[in-house]
Image (cartoon, rainbow, N blue to C red; front, side, top):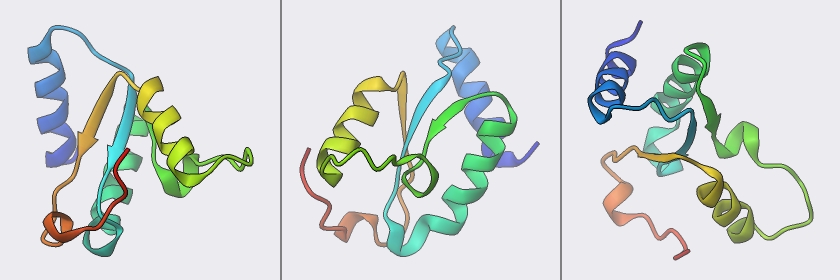
Length: 93
């Protein structure tokens, strides 16, 4: 088990409940490799993870609506903050 996943699982246990539906939020510019590994680790542990690179269905919805729906359907949001995240011009939801 990776260090990043071990930290997450300990945090989940500390909360007293394992929430299985997770939304991954990150800045594509600098964090995608890390997020890919995190996604793989979490799904291997049985979490249902929404990651835009594999989870965004083409339902003829706008990008923002896809994101809104995914956030509303998640139990928890995992936010990955890398060097460029503070300067990301992400749309407000």
